[in-house]
Length: 273
Length: 223
Image (cartoon, rainbow over all chains, first blue to last red; front, top):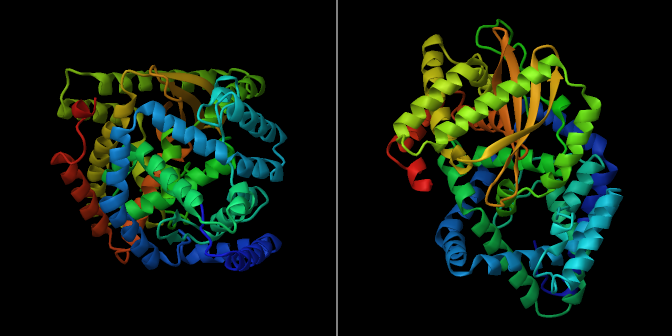
């Protein structure tokens, strides 16, 4: 995700705000966690801005219907698969520095090695990242972002927030998106220049990802009794899985042993994710 | 971010890396016990039956749904699944509402999963690990490997014993527990209607109605 800054001064001010937010989040995970616990008692979904979030959710859906989805469908139909894969590989390769920085900040040395090797191999043998030979050589791609890094170091997600264009962006992950800009060489290369390249990257990335999830998103929409709540839950579960780098934690599951309609226990506590 | 998330739903790459590692770990940590063997055998049988149902090109949608319903009735703990999906509203419905809810939720689940499982017809599930969870529960880890070279999809099965044998309670597909997703939507509907349970029943009926009317893609057309 790419922000286009109007000018360098605004960018620096934005950066300051972001870093202050970050410092506050990192310095006070305990209070934050406590605040979240108390919030959870009244609102098990931790979604205090739900009406606003739902409004933006519908707004995004509207623009998706009239603009993004038609463009993505067209892209999916017109651009051959090799072309789309090349674009995907190229964009993923461009993101390598951000992934590497976060691998390192999480102390994931092996994964950092993989990311660095992938970047080296795919940029050269893979013709500037258009191909992904490294994946075939036992170095499959993985993703990281600063939101995950914060989570690894104990920062809770915070209340759910859904933003126009960006989608689900709770404070921890929103901070991550902002900080990741500073790990990205392109941010500095285009700091004082026209933002054509970063904007193009953002737009093409969005179209490609939408094109890759046409069926999945349709299916989720059609099979949900509450589309917004389903997306919120999917976002949280998927983030949790990404933060754990795909390692399942089966000790963390809710207690289901005595769960049925006939027990005389009081209402089960709000189980939350 | 929503878009990025969805694409992660469809293609999970890190699993390719994690799977062999977890296989080794599970082989080291868990000596094969009679109970995990039982759990694995159960998942193997059920998954083969499920894949056979959705891959049956001669059956129409109604036949597939009724076969799938029978499979679930036999092998899933539907009472517990239905109870879990209500979260903190477990005690909200009256007896009559509860009866209706049980009916609707079963139909809903059958329709949703016959649709969602279409992707996996003619594929095979490989089981690579299992562990017990307390006395009555087990987790079986597996993945679906695609013949067309698509990245494998990880599937974890959460089983609980009922009447002496294992039943399915929940299934995790690429990191997402389906019953938890279901519960999130169900409780949200009730909460946003001021705790009115009938709102959930109405929503379920509407979704099922849409499926009947063909707004859900038919398995045959999706093949």
